[in-house]
Length: 331
Image 1 (cartoon, one colour):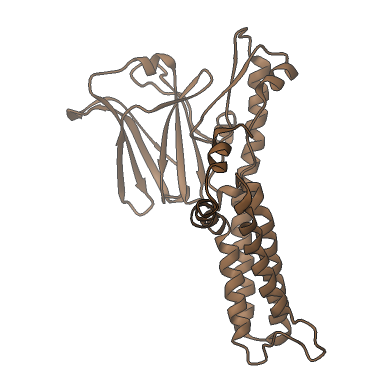
Image 2 (spheres, helix red, strand yellow; image 1 turned 60 degrees about the vertical axis):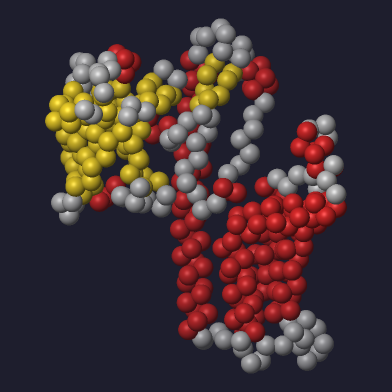
């Protein structure tokens, strides 16, 4: 409780705490679970449009519609009560999400009995199923890569002979439907260092899924000459964000990285299967996985299957026709 943010929260008046929670923290709850809330509200509205929709049964008990509405309010209430909490971590949003899912279940059960053969409900079931499959694929894919990344981290720790510190990359999560699908990546590195009998384990940030760099299934090109002999060690490629984006990783030697020319920039030209030409160029943006160095290039909204061929190399930005290196390959 000695955290400065907690102390700052305690110094707020009741009105300020309510304002902070409702207008700053609560919107994140709805944003994180927006799909669930949209479906829950849409289903309740659909139930209300049915002429037979009543909150109470003939026996005086609550209908599924009434229970669904109560559960939706309970979902919102679970977030509202956090107004008295100095912090609102992601894990505290789980009860709201669970009540929202329960609300959806009761609405669907109500509709199942009322309009079983209705085209709308069948379409709704289909949309929910497809949405679930699409989101599940991206989440499972991301967690699969995290598992492979963890295996790489363990290998890097085992191979490290540095007496001062052992460097490992942080986990990289490929895009998922919501950031709330991520697990808590906080690590007690002191305990980790003792467990692996290393002096000091230190993590550093990464910008790509490095699990692919030890898998030849993702390697599409072997070593080639650049400005130095065999300066390019290999090219790796993978997809992310529902397979809509394509990521290229160009692994270079350290000698190639240090062979910088005046006004040097890299070009990256893509020809798609329809013959259209996509031209990109960028400054050297090297990224590392321990002692391995890469150039990173991501193509948004250009899926892997849509790419026919690629040209890659470096040029003089003051004289674009002057090429320092160039290679061309077909996928």
